[in-house]
Length: 306
Length: 285
Image 1 (cartoon, rainbow over the protein chains, first blue to last red):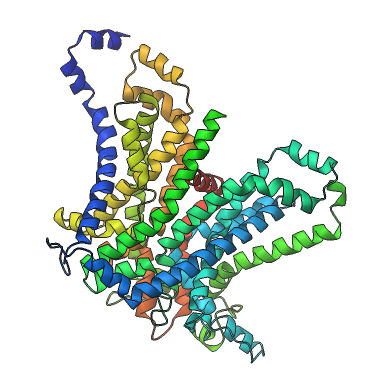
Image 2: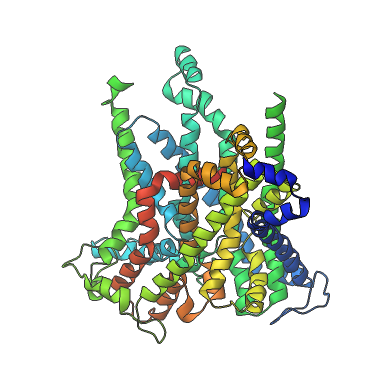
């Protein structure tokens, strides 16, 4: 109480001084965070228009860095791979996650244990996952070798070292690592479906499959969009997993945009082109996120008006 | 539904779920088994097999014996590096995030929505957009190739997540509680310590687990901003597999992988509920 009385009588400046620690604790971290996001983005965009190579330099080369990145085989392969990896990984992990969620939703025994098993890969680093899968998929020491040792001589599984199939090893490892995430969100969605709707469908004589298909699954589509967007965000910036699993190889068969950026910036000392590739990554990401943000905005508007 | 629990369809469900569970566990089981097999044993057969006798020596070698480049100190110094980056960065980012989240949700000040909006954009901005600027900043302030540099990066970048988590949690606290305390003369920090913090246990656990897992598992910054003896364990694992590519030592490597994954696996094992809550909270942003 004494505190309140004394503040009321004090002049405003000493009030500012007294509250300085709290201003510092609130504003310094928030401002540092916001400032680094804005200034770093602007700075990287600016570098992408300069002739910087080993060190950042001033100057203006227009879109030259962009055209040379876009014309490079490295980027073209990376972009094609991203399209294939992104769509295959997102689609398959969506299907796997939804299936697991529906199965776990059948009031089965040991649900908690099973859920933990499907989710534990998410707690492990992509470097570890990539390393382990590189062993399993290596024809010389992994699954193929095991099949040969067991007497199945004609068994062939060499995707890891096969130029045309290597990208699929990344799809496999990525699904293994993160389909549990889709499962967790879908399961939460399934659990929040109104029990009355399900009961009404059953009274109407709908079987379990029909109930799922016609009544329950349609309520999940907002969750589906969220899962797709988050998984796409992961696919676009995938780096650790590929670095540990194939390191872009064989050759440059599993190159992805994030690896191209790293390669240009830190291995070839092409800072301008590296920055241009990073901005291209950001643009790809925005192509996914902006429609999503617009959709979220419309949804929220409708929710408040309803 | 209950009385039909032995119908063929139920058996099919259990069968499919078990197959999936086996597939998810298989890589872990394979690595654990390999970490107990000698390098020769693996070289003769494949990576997938039962240990003939338990080669515990792999763990001793992985922990403090094998060589990366010229130093033969095992994975221990890199584990220490990861701990020295992860623990302070987790504490700082969580504490600062909690205070900032409390400020933007319960105190409101001019521009709070703007700054909160910008900070949460950090959830989406790819790391690649920040690599070059961080290199310059770290070099200018003399923190390149230091653990402190990584702590700084992870603290500032982690704020995007911690502020979001805490703000979304605190926003549900009734404003009357704060108003009453302010009328009683309690200031910003007193309300935080006395009222907010005691209510915060669930969200702080979620935030700490999330931050710890992400910083421990982070690779790109570790490999870009540190070299040699300063690298975190994720970067060291990659260096290790490159260093011994000529003479594979898969037994020792498996032990090293297990050791490196253990901290986050243990946290998941004991705090799985909170880990999942963090995942879904991050998703519904």
